[in-house]
Amino acid sequence: MRILFFMILSCILLLACNKEPGDPEPIGMGEPQIDRGNSVLPYVVIETAGLAIKNEPKIDATMSIYDGDRLIQNNYIGIEYRGSTSFRLSEKWSYDIETRDIDGEDLDTSFFGFPAEEDWLLLGHVVDKDEDLIFDRSLMYNYLGHELYRKLGRYTSRIEFVEVEVNGSYEGVYLFMEELKRDGDRIDVSKLQIDENEGEDVTGGYIISIDKTTAVNSDIERPLEYYLDNWNDDAMYTEDICWRSQYSIFGDLLSSAAYGPPYHADQYLETYFQYEYPKATEITPQQKAYIQTYFHDFETALLSEVELSSAEHYSNYIDVSSFVDYFIINELCRNVDAYRISTNLYKDKNEKLNLGPVWDFNIGFDGSGRIPAERWVIEYNDFVDRDPWMVPFWWSTLIRDDHFRSELKARWTAIRNNELVTEAITGLVDETAAYLVDNKAMQRNYERWKPGEENNYTSAISSLKTYLETRASWMDQEIAQF
Image (tube, rainbow, N blue to C red; front, side, top):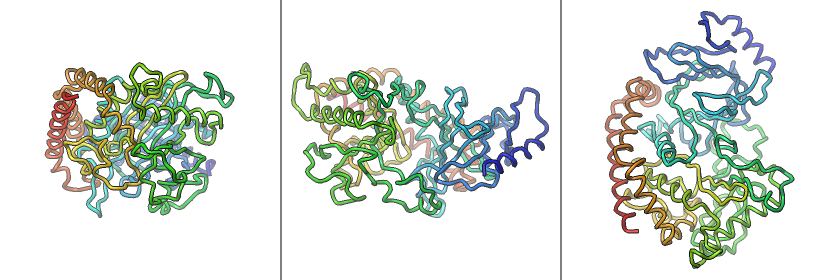
């Protein structure tokens, strides 16, 4: 199949013409099929030479990027759909991208000045025309969440707004983003070798997630229809890919057996930690034992009432400042997917456990209906009854802890006078909205997905700004009492 694919690309290459001096050599690029006027949003054209994109595995394709009418970059790629719940709910699908060389091997590549890597993603907002469903009418929830977190000096996925076309079909506004992974320019933890199983060697680096699971037996190729209704795969926790906290979401020791069937009666009580790096297929038994013990010791310390000066205090296990910053951004953005899913943690060699980077804001901000605007997102368990994914006891404990409250208050006070002053937050919204509107990308997106919705964009931006102003003011008042 790969030979046929590249034969087709070679034919396209022979037909390529009108190349300007200094333009990159074409490798079978597609050309934009719509007139974008004077838009300066990068335009991404993906061609699969007739191959159907799958949920997995990735198929061969090419990706060409245009600045106006000028081709600025093209690459061989592998592409597949991404997402679980969003994939089922949305007609506008997101994509995982892997840059490759002509032989199909991974190839580190830079886009938009980002550090070179091979793993990227194109993230679209959730929209279903038939169900009249739209998450994030502003098109900027994820962009704002990441940029606000970046303002605090934290690493998070670098992002560029783009428009996307796939096999001649215009697909709208997307975020071109870095996939989270271990890398010196992404999540910067030490490479943990398979023979590093004791002493300080085994102490890092690790990347762990609290999240839904992905499709089991991912090496089995399934029809696309399978992924539209595979809800059980979200909760298929097994000992091979994760471990369960010994404590319930209330901080009690669990007595039930772990790894029950999806959506069993007591699943809401459980918190599972998944191996992201090293991968579940590569982490050794000794490394598993180390990181599991470290998490358990942290959780036990968090539940213990000891003095800050004690060696058993929870702050000896975690970088408290990372928990504070994670809290601030997810609370400001009212991200109801934080804490309980879409949550990343990492631990470097001889270092404490860090929380972050942030992820997945698509049902946050003024679009979040599960948590009142004047309550903490960490109080999710008070508003949602027995969701399969609840907030761990960590947060109800931390928010009552004097040391955490003191750190949070100091940090919030400092950044509210600087990085997160109200004018800076709302100014970022205005700047982003103007970029999408002035280049008519917002209009083209809604002409494709929800004709007429573009007329509501001004009110959507006004609502978002009002929410942020109100939320930040409410946080000012709450945190001032700490």
